[in-house]
Image (cartoon, rainbow, N blue to C red; front, side, top):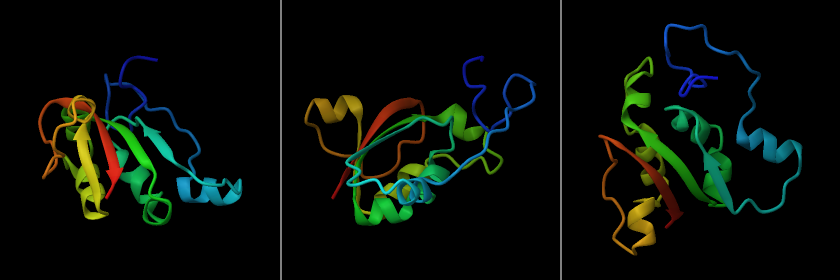
Length: 125
């Protein structure tokens, strides 16, 4: 697989892979998971869809979340919407940090990061 080719966005003029998907909410329910304390997400610009599919989990269990933000990946989305996943988490009351800011004990972001890229940490508020 070529870097970034796992994204639903058009990559390198190739045909995308098609895989069956299930939401995190359905997965947690189907397997009767106990407490979910943390989630790691890296889906090439489609983090918002993962978070939408985990809305119940994010509202009730409030796990910590580590995810990747890459502006170029989000710009390849059909809607070209950059920062949507971060805004969703902010709207759910999460505090957002770049991983570097979190490790250094700096203040959370007050609005979505829209340019560049960073590993992001979301902590329930």
